[in-house]
Image 1 (cartoon, rainbow, N blue to C red):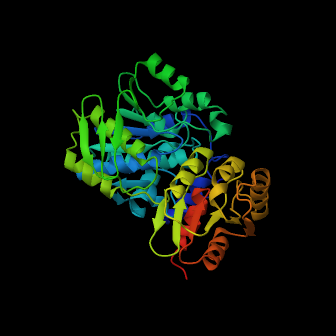
Image 2 (image 1 turned 60 degrees about the vertical axis):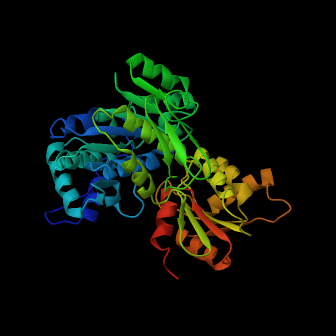
Image 3 (image 1 turned 90 degrees about the vertical axis):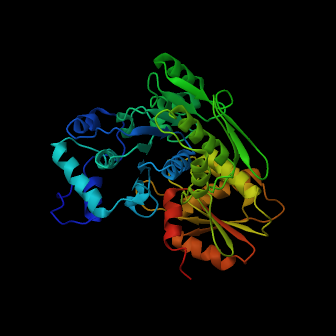
Length: 435
């Protein structure tokens, strides 16, 4: 049920509560409504538009693209989702998070143009950010797809260069339960005659077929671009461009060179419009940051924050943990939403975890701590992966309580990994400095 339109002078929080009430469902796939309202707004921009989709790796690829373009001196707009702590994190202009006032101004414009058309929270806010970017005289926009591709609100933008980072099982209720179905949905961000960068090493045939049908300029990892490296540095090789002696990205993790190579392939594909010199590439890779993606907090015990919430991401997180130095015990602060494949995530992570601190999450998709605990215990009973070492599984009413308990139990040389959802990481990050 919609709440009253926020009066003049209302806070950003009041506006966001209003937007959450506008549409009967949080997700409503389709572009008809959002295109209708977009046609009444001035969203035209001369910026080069990068649209980035994929199951995992989208955020990292966006962050590296933005950072390299900024280092090259371009004016850049970045749009990502979801946020961790504050909504404003979703939009940056020239590296700066947008202000409450700027967002509210755009919300008012979209509301005036809506004329009764029902928009979801994501559709409304996407239009607001696109209108903001249109007025900022940008050289480039980096836009992260919210869900899938074909029917996602970001797909009203015609990408000058589209990137798909990976295709794996997630959001099955909306995108399908196979890589072929999901690949078909994601491929719809491609545009005829324009670069379509795919960094998934084994993309679904449906994605390749769609690119061929529409005549996209398909760039495949392993065929059109690649990377190589040793312990000190790495190199990118594209169709015509090679970048040698690169420092490893500031973003940590096993897949970051794959994400970085996708970003570099994208830059090569538009180099006649946006030239990025080698020094800007080096600087940009070293300065890129993305909270909540294998983010290691300073201090002891070692605390790792990772929003991994599907099996593919959990497999990468498990590999990253294995590549770290020795820690006597690893504690998991863990919770996931009810529509996710919790058991598969737990199976990937079980070999690394000595004690699970299971937490409840709020909202209609949240699970109780007892439900999360039950699912973890079920997987552990099946696998017995840590035998003969005994694994403990505890339940807590909130992430905050679980995080406090994990820190209380851990010694300085142990490690705590917080994962399973953006909501899980956000709550832990919001209180990480508490004693």
